[in-house]
Length: 312
Image (tube, rainbow, N blue to C red; front, side):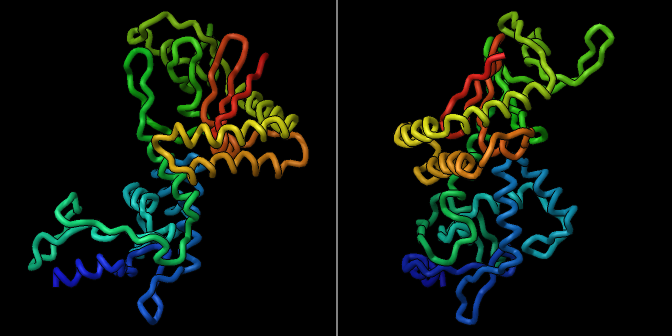
């Protein structure tokens, strides 16, 4: 039996338990086919993750909407979302022998860390998620795993509660900004402030960066988007130049993932018929990678590699 399973893997014959596999079922010949209703749930998970939501927030949203898991359960867990985002089968491929059976009596299976060879089958079945989007999600998974380390050595973890979380960087000390309740001479407000100023005992330098309200950040992002729209031809040329540079320098993304990020900004430019007049949180999550704060300007860096300076 064991040799038979290995032989089928070598031949690229994929066997998947579709009963708990969200998005797919099987036809009369045993082939994976898309379940349209469940596929929309999978697409939603990938879309919301790229829009900046955390796995926890995605799970909470699915529960609130009464959507069931692939196993028909009402409860969603972070780990469930994580597995869906990493499963190559959603882009039509299949990695065989991810797990191995260690005891055929109890049927206990463990992760295959080299006990048996693994086989990768491309385009085995119809994809729910395009390959470029899947690769973009893998790059985002890596980005969120790489916690920010400030000048004081303090590590910061990813938070998706606010579209500006973990992307506002101090130009003076390179530390992140944090949204805080601030009491300035009896005047209470919610502001963005450099963490070095919030934790001076851990700072390696006396940071004097400014504090500001979120409406200023919103204004800056609107101006940055409109700057690109005003000189769309020039920025499109820069995007094309960035493609080759990004592919050469890439260490966590393949060309499909890089191209997807560049395409997003191109699609944004092509879809806008006029300047933006209102702040759009979704655009920030999709297109902006970092905003660096200086005394007299903000530098907005897009995921495509473009940089725009907004002076005050």
